[in-house]
Image 1 (spheres, rainbow, N blue to C red):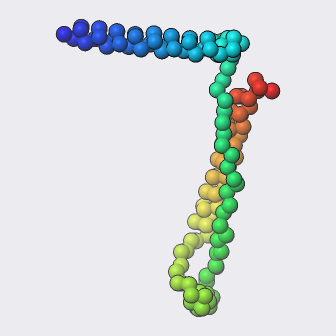
Image 2: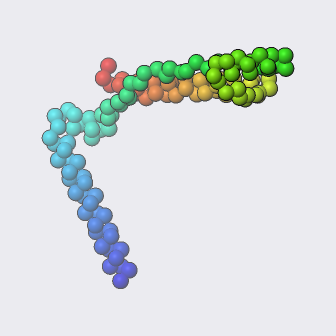
Image 3: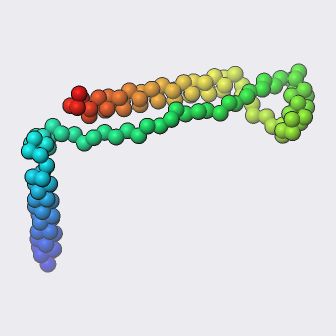
Length: 128
């Protein structure tokens, strides 16, 4: 019984492979001869389509430095502007770490731009 299942599976796999190759050959025959040869030789690469994207427009963020000396003034100014006075605080070390994280993100984005440029050059060098 196991042999029958395995043989059936192999037969269906072989059939799908053969018909797939046959369909591929039929498609290649419909193409111009030089294109068909390029596909067979592996010289033709699919078109690289990179969608264009507008540059990122970041929102302005205002930092207010609050100290023991100006905390009451800052809170009153916020209340006067109908804003809820809430503090998120960082010490100097954590602020520096946030700056470093942003720098790392920018470096990574630049790296990805280079990689995309290399892919674009690779795929489009035959066209030039």
